[in-house]
Length: 267
Image: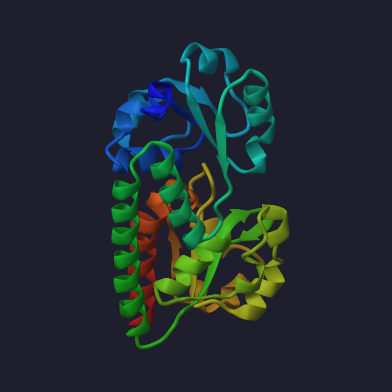
């Protein structure tokens, strides 16, 4: 029975998106990461690792050369990459987290995959405690500002589920909360006229991979009637902090949301 006396956890991990890379580093297991997405920003030290993919494309030969014993992927958008890797005999775990709870579950799952369950549980508890503190502060605000989160400019796309949930935790009201469960951007397209009708107090924009142009937002026909535009309450949060369903959104992302929403609520 000596054959089954010890289980080896993965030692060479390729992460096809940033959130699992950041999770492994937060667990103190960054040395196991041997390949990353070219879009990886956090943590900065991970940027030194070989970049093996974009979001929906991958350098397969580069991945194979790294000899990973585990590849971590995200969502149906990477399904074609996953299929090719599995055909080549690699072990691939694909996550599809879209809510705050699912992000926390992803962290626990990654911890289990690498044999760090206790560290993952502690990290999740710490994140939950921080969110609870922010939620209490949000509940104490004098009012709940109405928020339009602009995930893309043309067509207009409202915020995905975890973003909408974080807005509420931070003390705001997402004006398109009913759309947040739409996984693809096409399911969350809104009209400029409907934004005017719902009249947000604050506009928070995060255009994935592109700097937000506030003048472009102000210049939309009829938007001068919106409270957020009239009161100059238009803000940007960089996509790496809020549009990544991982630790960044639950730390830096919600921190920036809280600062913006609190400032607007106290005006």
